[in-house]
Length: 125
Image (cartoon, rainbow, N blue to C red):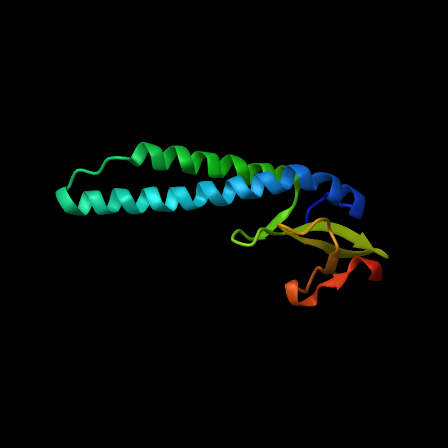
């Protein structure tokens, strides 16, 4: 578990930075996958692959964005949906505040040993 513990207010304050980071991460990751497929296809056709520089630049940006998430000490659970957990505490127990890209604010939490299926409304905190 991360050393940072978020309050709901702190997690919500991060969303204006987190949301665009997740959108860009998803876009760059998908573009890097496509670039890799393009290089593989070109190489199989004539043995001379080009475009690896584009793939490397995209992967470098993906790494930068992942490092940003690490700095914030949030856990990306699902890139496609933008599902993120924020470490938090409830009555001395470690919990996770749960948010998904597109949700207006952090409205869910779950015990650290439960996943998405165990989400509970913030009102129960």
